[in-house]
Length: 515
Ligand code: ASP
Ligand code: MG
Image (cartoon, rainbow, N blue to C red; front, side, top):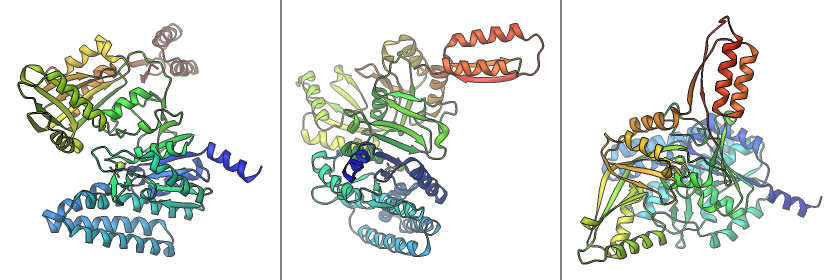
């Protein structure tokens, strides 16, 4: 096969792997990720990384404290420095470690000098985005140590975006720049920084918290990869956040529109823009666990039937309400339409909203991360009489194609919320989500309760088997493959009919998913 042909095949089969901060939080994690890359990737594949562990949060704290509490600031500074240095020393040979330590310390000195200046948006981004530089550089060096030829790349070399509340990658400007780098290093694993891009003025632009997923799908779409795998500390997308709900179960498949809605509702598992770059492509997207790749996965499927079932309970404990009051003489509907158009044009549509015609009031719900920015932008347009921001709200939602048409689910959702401080309910036009905005920021108990009554009660069965013979296990396997209720009934009948003598009691909890 000639080189050209081999190169074309390589491009056609190219994959992208993205590793989140929790997959890179210590020395063991880095080694595990290197093993995954060795096993699951080929030369020419792309790797996107987030900052290691909680580095981004630490950088934000460092920045904050530097202006209000010098003692705390230097403590955080010291912990960032020792954390990064320990990773480098623990992972690399002495010679290579010295080089990386030198590079790290020169970055660090640069960041310290920036902290002495007044902090604006640009300095903030430059400092907070540095965690990804350190993790990409280190991951690439670790791969080389594992005998895997690799090159790290600062995404600011090729990803172009401008500052805004939801920065968007300029594909036309970025594509040729990226292509140039890909050609240069076609036979290496390329480790790229997530989360950061560069503006026309040459300043660092952050893509929003958890924005590395967006970097990954954007780079994947720009290069036309075959498959994107997002590796994290959980196996995929669950029926609820598995860190909060212990009974949450993994969804092996999720419809594209359901995943998009989940992202739109600011669920931490999916950055709001993650699916956008690949929505008109046929790139496969899957989620997997870097701690245990065999734990299962979630595939985002474009063609999947749904039975108007609730798939996921999601929540956000840090949302705000932007309240807009119109002038008495203003045409309410017209202004409302104009505001919505403005949101759409600037890609800052709210998570949920309520219209109170009688009071000439509209409430728009946003995450705290973007609310202030949106409010400032809306203020500049000058369409309304008064705009204010109210803090300390939360959002709880159920997601599933067509669920708003299912009165059973709707009733159950309202019932569960009847004693809660609900500010308002909202449902998506596509009937894919039902949202409650609450004037509290504690939703843990509520999410568990909703999960229990909407997702577990109907599908969670306790089976008591009076036998441990092979035949029982055969039925269990059957049950798993058919995933239908009648399997239970047949199973129980047969067991009772065939087992007169009780040998042993086994109790099994079985969760059945409908797809
Ligand atoms: N490191 C960034 C953050 O913590 C981006 C990411 O993790 O995707 O938000
Ligand atoms: Mg992260």
